[in-house]
Image (cartoon, rainbow, N blue to C red; front, side):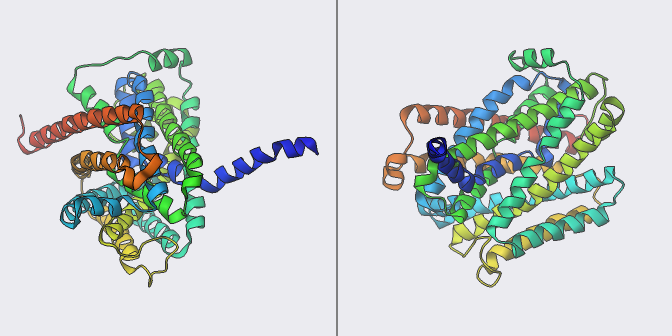
Length: 424
């Protein structure tokens, strides 16, 4: 009896953590979408383990930014778009939101491209897989309540373990992996710089801040639960980066070791079969399908939150279609557009993906600077403002991200010019 009473406070804390956990884990893992998986697959296949050393730095940056986003949501009870409108005014907000929406449309298209590519590995045509996925994610958000939606998303987050399994099945040299993990290296080559910047740049996207904060508000997490939400963010960020590391390791130990080259995550899944076995290949392909469907649900949902918060319209998964017509209408429109474009006879979506990343890069510095301004407003945040050390770290991360964003935009423009002007 005494032992039971001694464990009671721990049990209560554990129950509180389980009741709060969700927004941080879900947001961080969706970042490993079709584009992110492709980036890490190419990194491992083309450059081996040479990019592993940057992952701890990526994890720190992700934790810092997502923690501020979570704190804003918990303390103010408002979404980020709502706070931006109050801070910058309706006109500036409208411009930012327009860019975010356009970028999210392009991102949603790339997620359905991931659905099509992953199911083609299993012999299913995109004309069947894409409509089924679109209807499934639409029904989930429109018909289910927040608790059900969050549970489904948490299960989808757990399925990312497939990439860890693929990495183990690739039988890498773990001693070398450990050495490469702690040994910084850099190559001053255009391809290496591009994948290096892209790997970091895809880690923190504007939609993540909007979605996480909106889901925290939607879930009704209060300041008293802030410590548990912080754990949610940290665990989610670390898990997402660990998954990214295993993707690199899997492709490095097989495709890079065999001297082969790939362009997409689908190529990586197919290449793993003869090198690491069909089970590793199947798990990798299944992980791509899960990530693509997962993200195809989240990105339009994030966009719906952004639009409604920015203009003061009703929003929330727990609302009905009649209560929040713009929210569900926006979500429906993005699902329909994203799926429809994939069904068109388009030879390549690479330029669309590059454009979405560039647009994300344009708006990201603005979002992060506004977030730092909001998080340091004592009238808004009270005792939850940033401390000096946290501010130093946060501003350092923002400065580095802005620099890398400028580099990424420059590389993207160079890529477009090469396509537009052959021989350049």
